[in-house]
Length: 580
Image 1 (cartoon, rainbow, N blue to C red):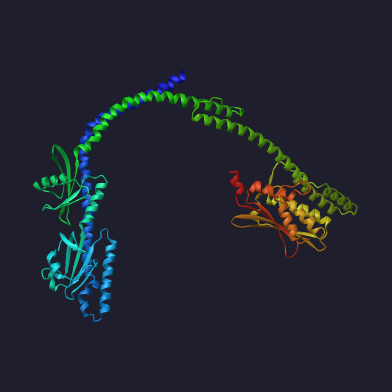
Image 2 (image 1 turned 120 degrees about the vertical axis):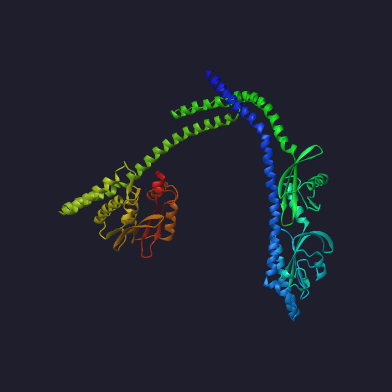
């Protein structure tokens, strides 16, 4: 009960302490928010409208720059000398080259622009508008060195366009009959209307363009009455390059923002009702105070539900985990809170049951593993081998070969001392090779035609491998490869390594085996042995995989010069990483 009261009281206290400064700060900030927002809106609207005006300026300036570049282009200027080319085909080819340049410029621009090049001397015209023909009188009517808003005929249709001419040389602006070339650049008002529509779709007012003479370009969904009223009021005052004005229309205040599009000498105008700007602030103020009261009531209820449905189950889960930590794996949670914790408790009970079963399974497996290791080590103690060694010692003693008896006894002692040590499951390669030397020295007393070579790099001698890994392989080579072999038998033990793997190779030059026997042997070592098959090679493979991972392997190869080679391969650093 005390825990419930403490937790519940703390939660409610924290909620109240959080709400009090929020209410105070909100009350203080709301008084200055309206004035700040007004100033911010003026600044933001000015930035928005100035940005759009600058974008239009940049596009128009780019068109003007391209026009000047065209007038200076030596290939374009060739148009004025076109009448000197006698071949009609070459004249047409030159015009096509110029037209291709104009089209490439048009494609690269944001606006669909009409470029026309007129050469009065050769009376030639090249234009992106294929409907145009050479007409110098039409150019004289609308000739303008700066951008001008004109009604033009494009593809037999009347269209309002902004147009500009660049005369080369510039001194012939008043006498274009003697000009070299005349570059005409024009674009329709439709592009500006699209920019205004895009600006409006972004929720930024109702923009339109107005000229000092009263002409207007509006967006497609403009409020005609409002734009006309604002235009009239603005014309009564002096329009600045960039300004904010509060204008009253029909009793409502509007924030009117303007920016000068210098290249066209038009003004970009936008307006927004002041009431629309402040309406969310006033509404949010009323909603805030109502929400605070409701939030306090709901917080009380939520605090209690949170304690009942979360705090209690968590405390129960913690107690169960502590019992599990103490080793009581029979711990189970029987409470059913009928919420998400039900699933968590069920999974906890399943986890503890699985953990209990797993511990028992691991315990059984550990016992089996130890029994398997003991059997594997005991299998190395071949009683027949021991009896033969004792018989050989007796024979050597009768022949008074003391040195041979001492050598044999020493190697036999070394061999059985190593094979009967069970306290450590791994050994270095060097220790394994010393065992093999003792084993092979003993076998040389039995098999007179047996010899051996050991060639393992020093860098591999300190590597840790499973104990008694090589002895069964060498024993198979002696018994099945060399003992029944008529010639001189040689067993070679080698070591190799590359950037990924280590390999120990045991090879003999003895009886060898057929391809079918080799495949049968490879198949046997992949499956657990039965009562009728040997376990040595299968054990070697399993122990290598347990220590070095699935990349470890044992493989067999038939040698062309006779005998068999056995390759034991494992990856670098696997054992060290596994221990880590």
